[in-house]
Length: 347
Image (cartoon, rainbow, N blue to C red; front, top):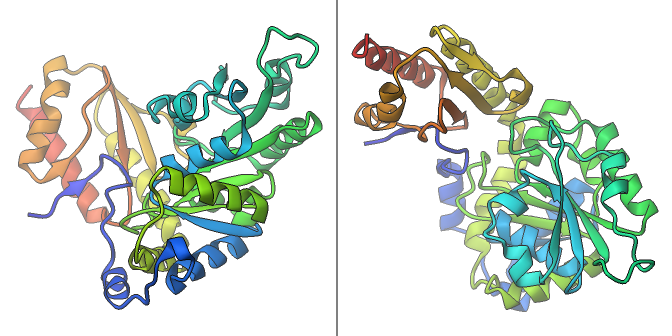
């Protein structure tokens, strides 16, 4: 059976157009740089973001780690938010692969400000006891469901550049950010030296994304990609779906955002549910449910699954639902009715 899946926007299924494009993709060997479909995707993404070059990446995590590898040297330090994907969800890869340390900034809204960055930069070379700061890592959109305004990205970028630091941005949901801000993605990309774009998160491509930056940076990242096993054969099959994601699926993200707000309003009809509106800029819905038995919350994922709905378990009383191309308004209505049915069994 098909499921209504709210666990992540990485669960999106390829569209029929993508499946057909993959079936008939013109392919080659990307390690030899003669896969025409990969080359086209990389060129398109670079042009779309205003960067010199692009590199196909199997995952967003690899894109982030290639950037850290390319911008840093062993024993240096990167500046990033306490809840950034690079720190929290990439298995400590930067410390293992790049041998760099983490200089963590705690900000209530997860946005790195110029003042935060100034204070986090180590006094190198004046103090021989401390590591050299070499990279600032940003995100947009943030994993917490909010976006970083352009003026704040500029502030962080300008501060970093004033200290001779490079900036990498995790852009797993960068097209969601551009949609929410009402700007062209180039306006976001101009305030970062490298940008890792995920085409399989909410954009329906089955695998991968593109890392963009200067030509020199991409050449260095390409070598590291091969080192990490990311050089793929006939990867135009994947790039064919990525092209459709870039050309078409980026244009419909507003619908996901609107459906997320619709889901929020329906959830708030339940007594005790509070949606965190400070994290409601894109397609993610964060909500807390008070005044219900803990057993109801613990059992809700298993009970919902019986009705064909997949949700992640609660973190205490907190939930996150992700809305995407495979979730319609009618799916949301059915989900609300199912939750209501389960709730009634506890009352």
